[in-house]
Figure 1: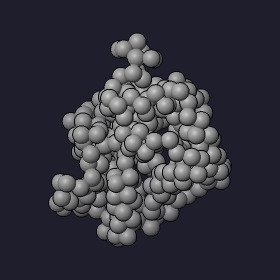
Figure 2 (figure 1 turned 60 degrees about the vertical axis):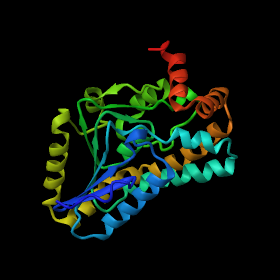
Figure 3 (figure 1 turned 120 degrees about the horizontal axis):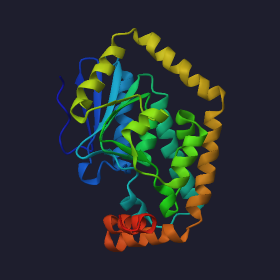
Length: 277
């Protein structure tokens, strides 16, 4: 087993035979996606693509969650942006997720605890997902006047399930329902998540790399022919409209985050919808 990179890095990398395991390493922020982490992930995926001895990539999260979504502290600190700035940002983030989907090696998400909003997008961009039985999924964006960055969801679970999850803002979809609806491939007990994900990766890694790469591309091609790229491009444009509308809920969420912190903003958001549960 290879040694992880230095502990201070926002992304850790280690090789386990032909499997490269990448660990989102912002545990204090529940591995929320900020620019530094996303750039590190880009570089790590490029490095894995260039190595013939890496046959499968696993993506997991350190600490108490897989990924709680995009970093809302960063968003609040950046303040109000114009349409051009939003389009650059949203297109960049959408393209990053497509790079995972189109990566030449299979990418497996290993998910525990919270996998929300942008974290769910990240998981869906992976080819396969193994979830612990303590995992929760969902999109809470609509609850504070934001949109979904990359609309991969309906391509994986179908339009009706996607509409229910996105329009309700449900962020408590348990692992067993995620399995039934096709969000994930397998659900295992929490203590079995690491060995179960590694076993799946090693099983894939036994196969001829050229065939695996071409078969992944062939399956992805079904989505491409159906117009997935055009649909995601349209979502970027629609999301720019949402973000530049500066809706009252979004402004209030940002204000509370800046003045009282993200925890207070999330409490305000949830109280509006759950009565302070």
